[in-house]
Image (cartoon, rainbow, N blue to C red; front, side):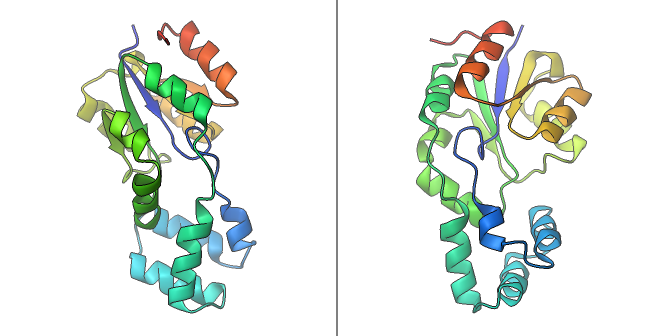
Length: 184
């Protein structure tokens, strides 16, 4: 029996960010994003190096990065599914400190409905899934993880969590229903 559902944000509840357009394949940007996402560098260091890569002032880089990265809107049909689920629902997203502020401010309705959010863990670390299961006091077989990234769904499945690779709202609703989740 499913007792909890964990949703990703970017590409599932909110349209995918336009990070590729922002960085425009700038040399060194991928590794910089990885380091920042893994929290191996500080926000200040990220801003400094990002501004150097894109040849912008630190102030201009920070403003453009913050504003342009998350240009997506709430995916209303998925949000309606999220709201209608009567069991525990959580958020798990690889969100860095800059985007965390933006998401919480601009999509507060998601966080108000979620039982808890996990924005400081990394989905590519299998241990993150174990830590979340422990925090929400659930066993893997009673949890569903939804993401639009195949690798992240595979990671969840590797420890026994039910995974759904999100494609569209109708497919999501059907797969949740097939796994026994009641949706109003």
